[in-house]
Length: 417
Length: 79
Image 1 (cartoon, each protein chain N blue to C red):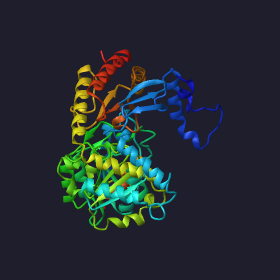
Image 2 (tube, chains in turn brown, green):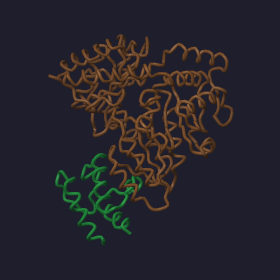
Image 3 (cartoon, each protein chain N blue to C red):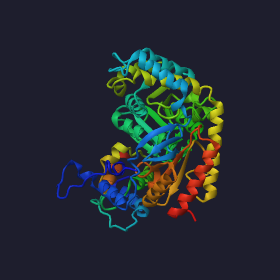
Image 4 (cartoon, rainbow over the protein chains, first blue to last red):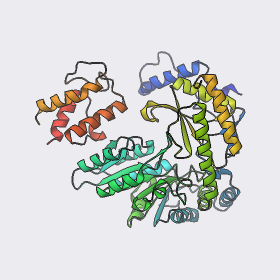
């Protein structure tokens, strides 16, 4: 293990440097310094030196099972996906060097939008350069000054940033609380535009939303509904369209936001919709217009992957099995989990505090297992979490190995008895 | 509801959130004096919203730093 990896981005605190624009980061710099001073391996500067498969990589010199990626369907190394990317790289070059509305729309961009239209059985699809930009762009463009956005308090950062960029009145409600949402909708002044923003799977605890009921209440109160299905695409729902499909309310959702950087296995973001005026967004959505479009190889891999995900029901069934077995195994080992039952491919293990969470993260890494360490402010209720996200390519044997590693590491760190 | 009545109602609502028993005046700040974190703010705002049947959007919350400013805002929002 090279020391450089652990030290690479450890911030240097200059004594007596005085006050400047960076002073606001001092508490975080100090938190990191005190954590790393104990000899703790830095959870936020891990380098994957080699990636052997969707589920195994060499991290900091160790062969490691990956349980903290969003590669739910294991598409990153799919031979057809890779071949499509290579071909597009040969045929169209490394990048587009331009905006979607100028010189940056190639045949591949239209092809991946067509694949999304077919995947979701919707009329329109608009592809962004990242999932973050999809939320930023759609939310800020459709909800502007004087409009009201009613959203779940546990929404992803990209949703909050989209709200801020658009200048609408932002009204959060308690996580998954249908009554709290309804009360706020009813208090909005008459005539104001209303947008309700929900997520299918909330990525911190891996819990799902009661979308059927929430979408119904939103519609009854005259709101448009946007659902972020980033963590459910390809996996949840009969056709992998997400939690709204699974709960039978996809037809009432006005906008579905998704990403290529999870089940699809590459990078990019999108919005699909049946709204008759949807296409105008291409001209007025700034995070769509004022950035370069995705490279041809990326849209080619995405289109191939999306079309394969349409026929992924066997993989979906295996991923559900993995999720159920890991949830049961960790619960039996004595860990506290984010949900009473497995609701998605994410299983969150709740840590008593950041210090022990970081120690557990490092102990797992030394066992040969990578999970995500999530800490405030990204987490709800200031929790420290070890977030496990499963892959359809994890074998049943690997899942058992993972449970064993958790048991060993948990006992070492004193999280379980 | 006038300012006095509104203030009296808010005083009752804030009591359970004032864990350190800080003596509250119009100049008391939520972040500094009362040490409200973002979760406490959310719960407290929800209580006020429900009690007065109003919306205090995040945008409005950004303008409210002190207890006195909150009372003034709630008086104004009730119309």
